Image (cartoon, rainbow, N blue to C red; front, side, top):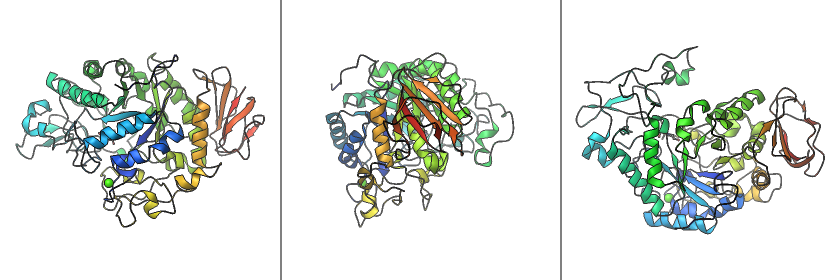
Length: 501
Ligand code: NOJ
Ligand code: CA
């Protein structure tokens, strides 16, 4: 099996940059308007030239696409819209040829309602023993978490859409069947897995009601889910047993990245079995130094398990960076993400500064996430931005990006793409750990990385004094703060730098 040697500083993923590909929107090669595996293979040089270490593919398995592929109808095949198993093998080989690792997305919590197991192995799912919902649990995208099986009328549990029935992870056969799927992909050469929604694998065995939420009523967009404290419907105390089974299926050398929607302080039982978990508190923190510092500190100390953070500021589920942190802060967001210690995940298009597009017409995603999934802009002068053929109808339209597509940004030293590349190159020199600088102006986030480097970011909307920090290595606005000059005493809004002491 192909393996790159481990560095003396730890496993390959310790400070890895992982590039998230949303396959449907990356590159179409057959003119059907949807991205595919040959398209990803054809564009791998972009990822390699960015300096990334690995690629994470959102799901490419056979799926009716009720949830963008997170409704899997067969864990061990490729959806024809994306290609074939042969294409998957070719993609894995093409990644490895370029020194890139490949991570598959595995969705263990639920299958598609069209997975053959739902009809042939109904015992693998979670059923109400009443003629109706078992309890008050609410699905992640709203509405009751129980629905009647159209064929039998029996009520089943779904933590997400009704088309995604939850597997019963207390069952040995479920653990064995999903473990087998992981091994299937390992044997084809993949290097690791992003594990979807693992805080949902095990629920309260007595299936007690979730208690009402405390505090002020939730905002309207979370009205449903926000009414309950989800302490029974997920994160059961024996979660370690389920995760142990996943770990045992792949062995210790396979990267497992957990998607766990819990505060960092509750991650320890997960981090005992997965290598790292996404730091969602930072993604959800307001763009404000004090809140960001609190979220970073929490993530770096998840119950004492340092080095297990997977930083993420953006993915296919949330408004893109310009829409979330503000267009003026996008360059500083790149500086932040790429100078934190540990693995970092970069969502396709972030390296261009892509913003949200219009919601789909008609919407493909009921939770309203189409806007964050528009096609990659390869070349703004090409039809559909180079995503698909001239006469084709892309599943979501290509949208303009300030600063242009990849082809345009490649030739501009002050482009977002150049900033990402430069920061990814610079992060290799950063020392271990992170220490915050305390004596800084309001709205300034500053931290030391190892003995030699300091990062300073002004998150406020007014100019702020910056601590003296040696010589600028990279700055968000290189024209104002060129590399090689003394670190600036003041930073404008949205500005930041990495300096060498
Ligand atoms: C998290 C995935 O990122 C999201 O897209 C999906 O809808 C849910 N998990 C359910 O699988
Ligand atoms: Ca295609």
